[in-house]
Length: 505
Ligand code: FAD
Ligand code: NAI
Image (cartoon, rainbow, N blue to C red):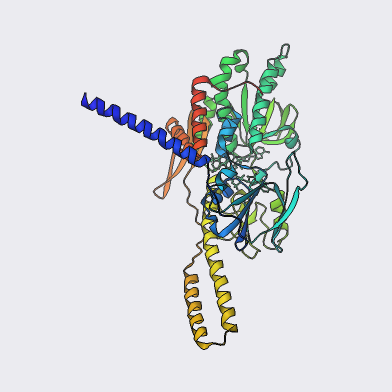
Protein backbone atom coordinates (compact mmCIF):
# COMPACT_ATOMS: atom_id res chain seq x y z
CA UNK A 1 0.00 0.00 0.00
CA UNK A 2 2.88 2.30 0.94
CA UNK A 3 4.51 1.63 -2.38
CA UNK A 4 1.28 2.41 -4.26
CA UNK A 5 0.85 5.64 -2.28
CA UNK A 6 4.42 6.67 -3.11
CA UNK A 7 3.91 5.82 -6.76
CA UNK A 8 0.71 7.87 -6.80
CA UNK A 9 2.46 10.84 -5.22
CA UNK A 10 5.42 10.59 -7.59
CA UNK A 11 3.06 10.49 -10.59
CA UNK A 12 1.16 13.50 -9.28
CA UNK A 13 4.36 15.49 -8.67
CA UNK A 14 5.78 14.58 -12.09
CA UNK A 15 2.52 15.48 -13.86
CA UNK A 16 2.12 18.82 -12.12
CA UNK A 17 5.85 19.54 -12.37
CA UNK A 18 5.74 18.80 -16.11
CA UNK A 19 2.66 20.94 -16.61
CA UNK A 20 4.21 23.76 -14.58
CA UNK A 21 7.42 23.65 -16.65
CA UNK A 22 5.37 23.55 -19.86
CA UNK A 23 3.36 26.59 -18.75
CA UNK A 24 6.48 28.47 -17.65
CA UNK A 25 8.36 27.87 -20.93
CA UNK A 26 5.34 28.72 -23.09
CA UNK A 27 4.73 32.00 -21.21
CA UNK A 28 8.41 32.93 -21.15
CA UNK A 29 8.58 32.42 -24.94
CA UNK A 30 5.38 34.41 -25.50
CA UNK A 31 6.54 37.49 -23.66
CA UNK A 32 10.09 38.40 -24.64
CA UNK A 33 11.79 41.15 -22.65
CA UNK A 34 13.45 44.42 -23.63
CA UNK A 35 16.29 44.43 -26.12
CA UNK A 36 19.36 46.62 -26.60
CA UNK A 37 18.58 49.32 -29.17
CA UNK A 38 20.16 49.86 -32.60
CA UNK A 39 23.74 51.09 -32.09
CA UNK A 40 25.38 53.00 -34.93
CA UNK A 41 28.86 52.17 -33.60
CA UNK A 42 28.24 48.46 -34.25
CA UNK A 43 28.62 46.73 -37.59
CA UNK A 44 25.61 45.86 -39.70
CA UNK A 45 24.94 42.20 -40.43
CA UNK A 46 22.32 41.50 -43.09
CA UNK A 47 20.89 37.99 -43.35
CA UNK A 48 18.97 37.01 -46.49
CA UNK A 49 16.44 34.24 -45.90
CA UNK A 50 14.49 32.74 -43.01
CA UNK A 51 14.94 29.05 -43.78
CA UNK A 52 17.12 26.38 -42.19
CA UNK A 53 20.46 28.16 -42.59
CA UNK A 54 19.34 31.66 -41.64
CA UNK A 55 17.21 30.49 -38.71
CA UNK A 56 19.96 28.37 -37.25
CA UNK A 57 22.30 31.36 -37.52
CA UNK A 58 19.78 33.69 -35.87
CA UNK A 59 19.12 31.22 -33.10
CA UNK A 60 22.80 30.83 -32.24
CA UNK A 61 24.24 34.31 -32.82
CA UNK A 62 25.03 36.72 -30.01
CA UNK A 63 23.70 39.99 -31.40
CA UNK A 64 25.45 42.20 -28.83
CA UNK A 65 28.11 43.24 -31.32
CA UNK A 66 25.90 43.61 -34.41
CA UNK A 67 22.91 45.45 -35.73
CA UNK A 68 21.15 42.59 -37.50
CA UNK A 69 18.68 42.86 -40.39
CA UNK A 70 16.80 39.82 -41.71
CA UNK A 71 15.30 40.08 -45.18
CA UNK A 72 13.02 37.31 -46.43
CA UNK A 73 9.79 37.12 -48.43
CA UNK A 74 8.48 34.73 -45.74
CA UNK A 75 8.26 36.07 -42.21
CA UNK A 76 8.52 32.51 -40.86
CA UNK A 77 10.67 29.42 -40.70
CA UNK A 78 9.28 26.34 -42.45
CA UNK A 79 10.11 22.86 -41.16
CA UNK A 80 10.44 21.30 -44.63
CA UNK A 81 10.77 17.62 -43.55
CA UNK A 82 7.07 17.56 -42.65
CA UNK A 83 5.88 19.31 -45.81
CA UNK A 84 4.72 16.05 -47.48
CA UNK A 85 2.72 15.36 -44.29
CA UNK A 86 0.94 18.70 -44.76
CA UNK A 87 0.13 17.79 -48.36
CA UNK A 88 -1.55 14.59 -47.19
CA UNK A 89 -3.28 16.24 -44.23
CA UNK A 90 -1.33 14.31 -41.58
CA UNK A 91 -0.23 17.58 -39.99
CA UNK A 92 -1.65 21.06 -40.43
CA UNK A 93 0.36 23.81 -42.06
CA UNK A 94 0.47 26.14 -39.04
CA UNK A 95 2.07 23.39 -36.95
CA UNK A 96 5.30 23.36 -38.96
CA UNK A 97 5.98 27.06 -39.23
CA UNK A 98 7.35 29.46 -36.67
CA UNK A 99 7.47 33.21 -37.00
CA UNK A 100 10.97 34.67 -37.47
CA UNK A 101 10.17 37.35 -34.90
CA UNK A 102 9.73 34.59 -32.36
CA UNK A 103 13.51 34.10 -32.56
CA UNK A 104 14.63 37.64 -33.16
CA UNK A 105 12.60 39.12 -30.28
CA UNK A 106 14.53 36.89 -27.91
CA UNK A 107 17.93 38.20 -29.03
CA UNK A 108 19.99 40.60 -26.90
CA UNK A 109 20.02 43.46 -29.43
CA UNK A 110 17.02 44.36 -31.52
CA UNK A 111 16.91 42.57 -34.89
CA UNK A 112 15.04 44.19 -37.78
CA UNK A 113 12.88 41.72 -39.72
CA UNK A 114 11.86 42.86 -43.21
CA UNK A 115 9.38 40.89 -45.29
CA UNK A 116 10.82 41.39 -48.77
CA UNK A 117 12.65 39.72 -51.64
CA UNK A 118 16.32 40.61 -51.94
CA UNK A 119 16.64 41.65 -55.57
CA UNK A 120 20.17 42.85 -55.97
CA UNK A 121 23.39 42.46 -54.06
CA UNK A 122 26.24 44.84 -54.81
CA UNK A 123 29.43 43.16 -53.56
CA UNK A 124 31.60 46.25 -54.27
CA UNK A 125 29.54 48.99 -52.66
CA UNK A 126 28.22 46.49 -50.11
CA UNK A 127 24.52 47.12 -50.46
CA UNK A 128 21.37 45.00 -50.75
CA UNK A 129 18.29 46.14 -52.62
CA UNK A 130 15.02 44.54 -51.63
CA UNK A 131 11.38 44.78 -52.65
CA UNK A 132 8.09 44.22 -50.88
CA UNK A 133 6.47 41.73 -53.25
CA UNK A 134 3.46 41.03 -51.03
CA UNK A 135 -0.08 41.92 -52.08
CA UNK A 136 -0.36 45.10 -50.02
CA UNK A 137 2.15 47.81 -50.78
CA UNK A 138 2.91 50.97 -48.82
CA UNK A 139 4.34 54.21 -50.16
CA UNK A 140 7.79 52.61 -50.12
CA UNK A 141 8.25 49.12 -51.49
CA UNK A 142 11.84 49.21 -52.78
CA UNK A 143 14.85 50.02 -50.64
CA UNK A 144 18.63 49.70 -50.58
CA UNK A 145 20.60 49.30 -47.36
CA UNK A 146 24.34 49.01 -46.73
CA UNK A 147 25.97 46.07 -44.95
CA UNK A 148 29.27 45.33 -43.29
CA UNK A 149 28.65 41.58 -43.42
CA UNK A 150 26.11 39.75 -45.53
CA UNK A 151 24.89 36.17 -45.18
CA UNK A 152 23.20 34.81 -48.29
CA UNK A 153 20.89 31.96 -47.22
CA UNK A 154 18.15 32.24 -49.84
CA UNK A 155 17.90 28.49 -50.53
CA UNK A 156 16.96 27.19 -53.96
CA UNK A 157 13.93 26.89 -56.17
CA UNK A 158 12.52 23.89 -58.00
CA UNK A 159 14.48 22.59 -60.96
CA UNK A 160 12.19 22.06 -63.95
CA UNK A 161 14.91 21.76 -66.63
CA UNK A 162 12.66 23.92 -68.82
CA UNK A 163 10.46 20.88 -69.48
CA UNK A 164 7.26 22.09 -71.19
CA UNK A 165 4.15 22.29 -69.07
CA UNK A 166 5.80 21.75 -65.67
CA UNK A 167 5.35 25.33 -64.44
CA UNK A 168 1.81 25.52 -65.82
CA UNK A 169 0.35 22.13 -64.92
CA UNK A 170 2.36 20.49 -62.13
CA UNK A 171 2.31 21.12 -58.39
CA UNK A 172 5.60 21.56 -56.54
CA UNK A 173 6.58 20.45 -53.04
CA UNK A 174 8.90 23.19 -51.86
CA UNK A 175 6.90 25.88 -50.09
CA UNK A 176 4.00 25.70 -47.67
CA UNK A 177 1.71 27.12 -50.35
CA UNK A 178 2.76 24.22 -52.66
CA UNK A 179 1.62 21.62 -50.12
CA UNK A 180 -1.67 23.45 -49.52
CA UNK A 181 -2.29 23.81 -53.25
CA UNK A 182 -1.51 20.15 -53.85
CA UNK A 183 -3.89 19.04 -51.11
CA UNK A 184 -6.71 21.10 -52.63
CA UNK A 185 -6.07 19.79 -56.13
CA UNK A 186 -5.82 16.22 -54.86
CA UNK A 187 -9.23 16.44 -53.19
CA UNK A 188 -10.63 18.27 -56.24
CA UNK A 189 -9.63 15.30 -58.43
CA UNK A 190 -11.43 12.94 -56.06
CA UNK A 191 -14.60 15.03 -55.85
CA UNK A 192 -14.59 15.53 -59.63
CA UNK A 193 -14.27 11.77 -60.10
CA UNK A 194 -17.33 11.42 -57.83
CA UNK A 195 -19.35 13.79 -60.03
CA UNK A 196 -22.33 11.86 -61.46
CA UNK A 197 -22.06 10.63 -65.03
CA UNK A 198 -18.27 10.63 -65.23
CA UNK A 199 -17.01 7.96 -67.67
CA UNK A 200 -14.91 5.09 -66.34
CA UNK A 201 -11.95 6.32 -68.36
CA UNK A 202 -12.25 9.82 -66.92
CA UNK A 203 -12.58 8.48 -63.37
CA UNK A 204 -9.40 6.44 -63.86
CA UNK A 205 -7.59 9.50 -65.20
CA UNK A 206 -8.72 11.78 -62.38
CA UNK A 207 -7.72 9.23 -59.76
CA UNK A 208 -4.24 8.69 -61.16
CA UNK A 209 -1.60 10.72 -59.27
CA UNK A 210 1.86 11.01 -60.76
CA UNK A 211 4.85 12.02 -58.64
CA UNK A 212 7.92 12.99 -60.66
CA UNK A 213 11.30 12.46 -58.97
CA UNK A 214 12.42 9.51 -56.87
CA UNK A 215 14.52 11.62 -54.50
CA UNK A 216 13.48 11.80 -50.82
CA UNK A 217 10.77 14.43 -51.53
CA UNK A 218 9.01 12.27 -54.15
CA UNK A 219 9.31 9.14 -52.01
CA UNK A 220 7.98 10.74 -48.83
CA UNK A 221 5.11 12.37 -50.65
CA UNK A 222 4.10 9.09 -52.34
CA UNK A 223 4.24 7.33 -48.96
CA UNK A 224 2.08 9.99 -47.31
CA UNK A 225 -0.50 9.91 -50.13
CA UNK A 226 -0.66 6.15 -49.84
CA UNK A 227 -1.42 6.45 -46.09
CA UNK A 228 -4.16 8.98 -46.80
CA UNK A 229 -5.70 6.54 -49.24
CA UNK A 230 -5.45 3.51 -46.94
CA UNK A 231 -6.38 5.17 -43.64
CA UNK A 232 -9.09 7.57 -44.74
CA UNK A 233 -10.18 7.63 -48.37
CA UNK A 234 -11.08 3.93 -48.36
CA UNK A 235 -13.63 4.65 -45.62
CA UNK A 236 -15.13 7.82 -47.07
CA UNK A 237 -14.96 7.13 -50.80
CA UNK A 238 -15.42 3.33 -50.90
CA UNK A 239 -16.71 3.46 -54.47
CA UNK A 240 -13.58 5.29 -55.70
CA UNK A 241 -10.75 4.21 -53.42
CA UNK A 242 -9.88 1.03 -55.30
CA UNK A 243 -9.40 3.07 -58.48
CA UNK A 244 -6.88 5.50 -56.96
CA UNK A 245 -3.36 4.90 -58.31
CA UNK A 246 -0.04 6.52 -57.42
CA UNK A 247 2.84 6.35 -59.92
CA UNK A 248 6.36 7.53 -59.15
CA UNK A 249 8.50 8.37 -62.19
CA UNK A 250 12.29 8.51 -61.86
CA UNK A 251 14.82 9.12 -64.65
CA UNK A 252 17.67 7.24 -62.90
CA UNK A 253 17.91 3.44 -62.60
CA UNK A 254 16.76 3.55 -58.97
CA UNK A 255 15.02 5.76 -56.46
CA UNK A 256 16.84 7.38 -53.52
CA UNK A 257 20.33 7.24 -55.05
CA UNK A 258 21.92 8.72 -51.91
CA UNK A 259 20.64 5.93 -49.62
CA UNK A 260 22.30 2.52 -49.20
CA UNK A 261 21.39 -0.26 -51.64
CA UNK A 262 19.62 -2.30 -48.97
CA UNK A 263 17.28 0.62 -48.16
CA UNK A 264 16.59 1.31 -51.83
CA UNK A 265 15.50 -2.34 -52.21
CA UNK A 266 13.43 -2.09 -49.02
CA UNK A 267 11.69 1.07 -50.27
CA UNK A 268 10.98 -0.45 -53.66
CA UNK A 269 9.52 -3.61 -52.12
CA UNK A 270 7.42 -1.59 -49.63
CA UNK A 271 6.07 0.51 -52.52
CA UNK A 272 5.25 -2.67 -54.42
CA UNK A 273 3.26 -3.99 -51.43
CA UNK A 274 1.57 -0.59 -51.14
CA UNK A 275 0.66 -0.73 -54.83
CA UNK A 276 2.63 2.42 -55.66
CA UNK A 277 4.04 1.93 -59.16
CA UNK A 278 7.66 2.92 -59.57
CA UNK A 279 8.82 3.64 -63.12
CA UNK A 280 12.62 3.98 -63.14
CA UNK A 281 14.80 4.87 -66.16
CA UNK A 282 11.76 6.85 -67.29
CA UNK A 283 11.96 10.53 -68.01
CA UNK A 284 9.12 13.03 -68.00
CA UNK A 285 9.41 15.04 -71.21
CA UNK A 286 6.24 17.10 -70.98
CA UNK A 287 3.41 17.77 -68.57
CA UNK A 288 0.03 18.45 -70.15
CA UNK A 289 -3.30 19.39 -68.66
CA UNK A 290 -4.49 15.86 -67.89
CA UNK A 291 -1.43 13.77 -68.77
CA UNK A 292 2.35 13.34 -68.64
CA UNK A 293 4.50 12.47 -71.62
CA UNK A 294 7.17 9.91 -70.74
CA UNK A 295 10.30 8.69 -72.42
CA UNK A 296 10.37 5.01 -71.55
CA UNK A 297 13.58 2.99 -70.86
CA UNK A 298 13.52 1.74 -74.49
CA UNK A 299 13.34 5.42 -75.64
CA UNK A 300 9.78 5.13 -76.91
CA UNK A 301 7.32 7.85 -75.90
CA UNK A 302 4.19 7.18 -73.87
CA UNK A 303 1.41 9.48 -72.71
CA UNK A 304 0.01 8.68 -69.28
CA UNK A 305 -3.40 10.19 -68.42
CA UNK A 306 -3.55 11.54 -64.87
CA UNK A 307 -5.46 13.93 -62.65
CA UNK A 308 -2.52 15.49 -60.85
CA UNK A 309 1.25 15.73 -61.36
CA UNK A 310 3.54 16.60 -58.46
CA UNK A 311 6.99 17.69 -59.53
CA UNK A 312 9.85 16.86 -57.16
CA UNK A 313 12.71 17.07 -59.66
CA UNK A 314 15.38 18.66 -57.46
CA UNK A 315 16.91 22.11 -56.89
CA UNK A 316 17.98 25.08 -59.00
CA UNK A 317 19.61 28.35 -57.89
CA UNK A 318 17.49 31.47 -57.45
CA UNK A 319 17.75 34.55 -59.67
CA UNK A 320 19.20 36.71 -56.89
CA UNK A 321 21.97 34.12 -56.41
CA UNK A 322 22.68 33.83 -60.13
CA UNK A 323 22.79 37.64 -60.50
CA UNK A 324 25.27 37.95 -57.64
CA UNK A 325 27.45 35.19 -59.10
CA UNK A 326 27.38 36.88 -62.51
CA UNK A 327 29.09 39.90 -60.93
CA UNK A 328 32.10 37.72 -60.09
CA UNK A 329 32.41 35.60 -63.25
CA UNK A 330 36.04 34.58 -62.66
CA UNK A 331 35.48 32.95 -59.27
CA UNK A 332 31.80 31.98 -59.49
CA UNK A 333 31.40 29.41 -62.23
CA UNK A 334 29.65 26.55 -60.44
CA UNK A 335 26.15 26.06 -61.81
CA UNK A 336 24.99 24.47 -58.53
CA UNK A 337 25.44 27.73 -56.61
CA UNK A 338 27.80 30.10 -54.81
CA UNK A 339 31.34 28.81 -54.38
CA UNK A 340 32.62 29.37 -50.85
CA UNK A 341 35.88 28.69 -49.02
CA UNK A 342 36.15 26.58 -45.88
CA UNK A 343 34.94 29.54 -43.78
CA UNK A 344 31.80 29.86 -45.97
CA UNK A 345 33.10 33.13 -47.43
CA UNK A 346 32.00 33.74 -50.98
CA UNK A 347 34.98 33.37 -53.29
CA UNK A 348 35.91 36.54 -55.17
CA UNK A 349 34.71 38.86 -52.38
CA UNK A 350 36.74 40.53 -49.63
CA UNK A 351 35.45 38.10 -47.00
CA UNK A 352 32.40 40.11 -46.00
CA UNK A 353 29.85 38.02 -47.94
CA UNK A 354 29.02 34.51 -46.72
CA UNK A 355 26.79 31.91 -48.34
CA UNK A 356 25.28 28.81 -46.80
CA UNK A 357 22.71 26.10 -47.37
CA UNK A 358 21.10 25.25 -50.69
CA UNK A 359 22.25 28.44 -52.44
CA UNK A 360 25.91 27.46 -52.02
CA UNK A 361 27.85 24.81 -53.91
CA UNK A 362 29.84 22.64 -51.52
CA UNK A 363 30.80 18.99 -51.29
CA UNK A 364 27.79 18.41 -49.02
CA UNK A 365 24.25 17.48 -50.06
CA UNK A 366 21.69 20.30 -50.12
CA UNK A 367 20.00 19.29 -46.88
CA UNK A 368 18.53 20.96 -43.82
CA UNK A 369 21.14 19.23 -41.71
CA UNK A 370 23.99 20.87 -43.62
CA UNK A 371 22.31 24.31 -43.73
CA UNK A 372 21.58 24.23 -39.98
CA UNK A 373 25.14 23.26 -39.07
CA UNK A 374 26.52 25.93 -41.39
CA UNK A 375 24.22 28.55 -39.86
CA UNK A 376 25.27 27.69 -36.30
CA UNK A 377 28.94 27.66 -37.33
CA UNK A 378 28.68 31.06 -39.00
CA UNK A 379 26.96 32.52 -35.94
CA UNK A 380 29.89 31.47 -33.79
CA UNK A 381 32.35 32.68 -36.38
CA UNK A 382 30.72 36.11 -36.62
CA UNK A 383 31.20 36.55 -32.89
CA UNK A 384 34.91 35.82 -33.35
CA UNK A 385 35.00 38.21 -36.31
CA UNK A 386 33.42 40.95 -34.15
CA UNK A 387 36.15 40.40 -31.54
CA UNK A 388 38.81 40.61 -34.23
CA UNK A 389 37.26 43.76 -35.73
CA UNK A 390 37.15 45.43 -32.31
CA UNK A 391 40.80 44.61 -31.64
CA UNK A 392 41.78 45.85 -35.11
CA UNK A 393 39.96 49.10 -34.41
CA UNK A 394 41.79 49.42 -31.09
CA UNK A 395 45.13 48.80 -32.81
CA UNK A 396 44.42 51.46 -35.44
CA UNK A 397 43.56 53.99 -32.78
CA UNK A 398 46.65 53.09 -30.69
CA UNK A 399 48.89 53.44 -33.73
CA UNK A 400 47.35 56.80 -34.60
CA UNK A 401 47.92 58.04 -31.02
CA UNK A 402 51.54 56.83 -31.10
CA UNK A 403 52.16 58.80 -34.29
CA UNK A 404 50.71 61.99 -32.88
CA UNK A 405 52.31 61.67 -29.47
CA UNK A 406 55.56 63.48 -28.59
CA UNK A 407 55.87 62.10 -25.08
CA UNK A 408 58.36 59.17 -25.04
CA UNK A 409 56.96 57.74 -21.80
CA UNK A 410 53.44 57.71 -23.24
CA UNK A 411 54.71 56.16 -26.49
CA UNK A 412 56.37 53.34 -24.54
CA UNK A 413 53.13 52.66 -22.69
CA UNK A 414 51.16 52.72 -25.95
CA UNK A 415 53.60 50.31 -27.61
CA UNK A 416 53.05 47.89 -24.72
CA UNK A 417 49.30 48.21 -25.34
CA UNK A 418 49.87 47.48 -29.03
CA UNK A 419 51.80 44.33 -28.26
CA UNK A 420 49.13 43.17 -25.75
CA UNK A 421 46.39 43.81 -28.32
CA UNK A 422 48.32 41.90 -30.98
CA UNK A 423 48.61 38.97 -28.59
CA UNK A 424 44.85 39.11 -27.97
CA UNK A 425 44.29 39.17 -31.72
CA UNK A 426 46.44 36.11 -32.24
CA UNK A 427 44.22 34.26 -29.78
CA UNK A 428 41.08 34.93 -31.84
CA UNK A 429 40.98 31.82 -33.99
CA UNK A 430 38.74 31.39 -37.01
CA UNK A 431 38.23 27.67 -37.46
CA UNK A 432 37.07 26.23 -40.80
CA UNK A 433 33.60 24.70 -41.09
CA UNK A 434 33.39 20.99 -40.34
CA UNK A 435 30.23 19.04 -41.12
CA UNK A 436 29.15 16.14 -38.91
CA UNK A 437 26.71 13.86 -40.70
CA UNK A 438 24.06 12.59 -38.31
CA UNK A 439 22.39 10.25 -40.77
CA UNK A 440 19.64 10.30 -43.39
CA UNK A 441 16.03 9.51 -42.61
CA UNK A 442 12.97 9.22 -44.82
CA UNK A 443 9.37 8.18 -44.34
CA UNK A 444 8.14 5.69 -46.95
CA UNK A 445 4.50 5.23 -45.91
CA UNK A 446 2.65 2.35 -44.20
CA UNK A 447 4.19 3.42 -40.87
CA UNK A 448 7.66 2.52 -42.14
CA UNK A 449 10.74 4.68 -42.41
CA UNK A 450 14.31 4.14 -43.55
CA UNK A 451 17.48 5.39 -41.88
CA UNK A 452 21.14 5.41 -42.88
CA UNK A 453 22.98 6.21 -39.68
CA UNK A 454 26.73 6.65 -39.19
CA UNK A 455 27.97 3.92 -36.85
CA UNK A 456 31.56 3.22 -35.77
CA UNK A 457 33.23 4.59 -38.91
CA UNK A 458 30.66 2.73 -41.00
CA UNK A 459 26.97 2.89 -41.71
CA UNK A 460 23.97 1.33 -40.01
CA UNK A 461 21.00 0.91 -42.33
CA UNK A 462 17.57 0.20 -40.91
CA UNK A 463 14.03 0.22 -42.20
CA UNK A 464 10.60 -0.61 -40.80
CA UNK A 465 8.17 0.29 -38.07
CA UNK A 466 10.82 0.80 -35.33
CA UNK A 467 12.67 3.18 -37.66
CA UNK A 468 9.37 4.99 -38.20
CA UNK A 469 9.05 5.57 -34.44
CA UNK A 470 12.65 6.79 -34.42
CA UNK A 471 11.84 9.06 -37.42
CA UNK A 472 8.89 10.53 -35.56
CA UNK A 473 10.81 11.14 -32.34
CA UNK A 474 13.80 12.57 -34.25
CA UNK A 475 11.59 15.04 -36.12
CA UNK A 476 9.62 15.92 -33.01
CA UNK A 477 12.82 16.79 -31.17
CA UNK A 478 14.24 18.72 -34.15
CA UNK A 479 11.10 20.82 -34.48
CA UNK A 480 11.73 24.43 -33.79
CA UNK A 481 9.82 25.33 -30.66
CA UNK A 482 7.74 23.93 -27.86
CA UNK A 483 4.73 25.31 -29.76
CA UNK A 484 5.67 23.39 -32.94
CA UNK A 485 6.30 20.18 -31.01
CA UNK A 486 2.98 20.43 -29.18
CA UNK A 487 1.05 21.18 -32.37
CA UNK A 488 2.64 18.39 -34.43
CA UNK A 489 2.20 15.84 -31.62
CA UNK A 490 -1.45 16.83 -31.28
CA UNK A 491 -1.92 16.62 -35.09
CA UNK A 492 -0.56 13.07 -35.01
CA UNK A 493 -2.88 12.17 -32.15
CA UNK A 494 -5.83 13.80 -33.92
CA UNK A 495 -5.17 11.74 -37.05
CA UNK A 496 -4.84 8.57 -34.96
CA UNK A 497 -8.24 9.16 -33.34
CA UNK A 498 -10.29 10.94 -35.98
CA UNK A 499 -8.41 10.45 -39.27
CA UNK A 500 -7.33 13.13 -41.73
CA UNK A 501 -9.58 16.02 -42.62
CA UNK A 502 -10.57 15.41 -46.23
CA UNK A 503 -12.91 18.37 -46.68
CA UNK A 504 -11.77 20.76 -49.38
CA UNK A 505 -11.47 24.44 -48.44
P1 FAD B 1 15.61 27.29 -47.21
O1 FAD B 1 15.31 26.55 -45.96
O2 FAD B 1 14.85 26.93 -48.43
O3 FAD B 1 15.43 28.83 -46.90
C1 FAD B 1 15.58 29.80 -47.88
C2 FAD B 1 14.97 31.08 -47.35
O4 FAD B 1 15.25 32.15 -48.23
C3 FAD B 1 13.46 31.01 -47.23
O5 FAD B 1 13.07 31.59 -46.03
C4 FAD B 1 12.97 31.84 -48.40
O6 FAD B 1 11.71 32.43 -48.16
C5 FAD B 1 14.07 32.88 -48.48
N1 FAD B 1 14.21 33.54 -49.76
C6 FAD B 1 13.89 33.09 -50.99
N2 FAD B 1 14.16 34.02 -51.92
C7 FAD B 1 14.68 35.09 -51.27
C8 FAD B 1 15.13 36.36 -51.67
N3 FAD B 1 15.12 36.75 -52.94
N4 FAD B 1 15.57 37.22 -50.71
C9 FAD B 1 15.57 36.87 -49.41
N5 FAD B 1 15.15 35.68 -48.98
C10 FAD B 1 14.72 34.79 -49.89
N6 FAD B 1 16.63 18.10 -45.58
C11 FAD B 1 17.00 17.27 -44.56
O7 FAD B 1 18.15 17.34 -44.12
N7 FAD B 1 16.12 16.39 -44.02
C12 FAD B 1 14.84 16.29 -44.44
O8 FAD B 1 14.08 15.47 -43.95
C13 FAD B 1 14.43 17.15 -45.50
N8 FAD B 1 13.17 17.07 -45.96
C14 FAD B 1 12.79 17.92 -46.98
C15 FAD B 1 11.49 17.82 -47.45
C16 FAD B 1 11.07 18.64 -48.49
C17 FAD B 1 9.67 18.52 -49.00
C18 FAD B 1 11.97 19.57 -49.05
C19 FAD B 1 11.52 20.47 -50.16
C20 FAD B 1 13.26 19.65 -48.60
C21 FAD B 1 13.69 18.82 -47.56
N9 FAD B 1 14.99 18.87 -47.08
C22 FAD B 1 15.38 18.05 -46.05
C23 FAD B 1 15.95 19.80 -47.65
C24 FAD B 1 15.99 21.08 -46.82
O9 FAD B 1 14.70 21.62 -46.69
C25 FAD B 1 16.88 22.13 -47.49
O10 FAD B 1 18.14 21.59 -47.72
C26 FAD B 1 16.99 23.33 -46.56
O11 FAD B 1 15.73 23.98 -46.52
C27 FAD B 1 18.06 24.30 -47.04
O12 FAD B 1 18.11 25.37 -46.15
P2 FAD B 1 18.38 26.84 -46.69
O13 FAD B 1 18.41 27.72 -45.50
O14 FAD B 1 19.54 26.84 -47.60
O15 FAD B 1 17.13 27.17 -47.60
P1 NAI C 1 16.54 15.21 -55.62
O1 NAI C 1 17.45 16.03 -56.42
O2 NAI C 1 17.08 14.43 -54.48
O3 NAI C 1 15.74 14.21 -56.54
C1 NAI C 1 15.12 14.62 -57.73
C2 NAI C 1 14.93 13.42 -58.60
O4 NAI C 1 14.13 13.77 -59.70
C3 NAI C 1 16.25 12.88 -59.14
O5 NAI C 1 16.42 11.55 -58.75
C4 NAI C 1 16.12 13.05 -60.64
O6 NAI C 1 16.71 11.99 -61.36
C5 NAI C 1 14.60 13.05 -60.82
N1 NAI C 1 14.18 13.77 -62.04
C6 NAI C 1 14.52 15.02 -62.42
N2 NAI C 1 13.94 15.31 -63.60
C7 NAI C 1 13.22 14.25 -63.97
C8 NAI C 1 12.41 13.96 -65.11
N3 NAI C 1 12.24 14.82 -66.07
N4 NAI C 1 11.81 12.77 -65.15
C9 NAI C 1 11.97 11.88 -64.16
N5 NAI C 1 12.73 12.08 -63.07
C10 NAI C 1 13.35 13.25 -62.98
O7 NAI C 1 15.39 16.23 -55.12
P2 NAI C 1 14.51 16.20 -53.80
O8 NAI C 1 13.95 14.87 -53.53
O9 NAI C 1 13.56 17.32 -53.93
O10 NAI C 1 15.55 16.54 -52.66
C11 NAI C 1 16.26 17.78 -52.68
C12 NAI C 1 17.27 17.77 -51.53
O11 NAI C 1 16.58 17.78 -50.30
C13 NAI C 1 18.16 16.56 -51.53
O12 NAI C 1 19.44 16.91 -51.10
C14 NAI C 1 17.56 15.67 -50.50
O13 NAI C 1 18.52 14.85 -49.85
C15 NAI C 1 16.95 16.66 -49.52
N6 NAI C 1 15.78 16.04 -48.91
C16 NAI C 1 16.00 15.18 -47.88
C17 NAI C 1 14.95 14.52 -47.30
C18 NAI C 1 15.23 13.56 -46.21
O14 NAI C 1 16.37 13.43 -45.80
N7 NAI C 1 14.24 12.86 -45.72
C19 NAI C 1 13.56 14.73 -47.74
C20 NAI C 1 13.45 15.61 -48.89
C21 NAI C 1 14.52 16.24 -49.42
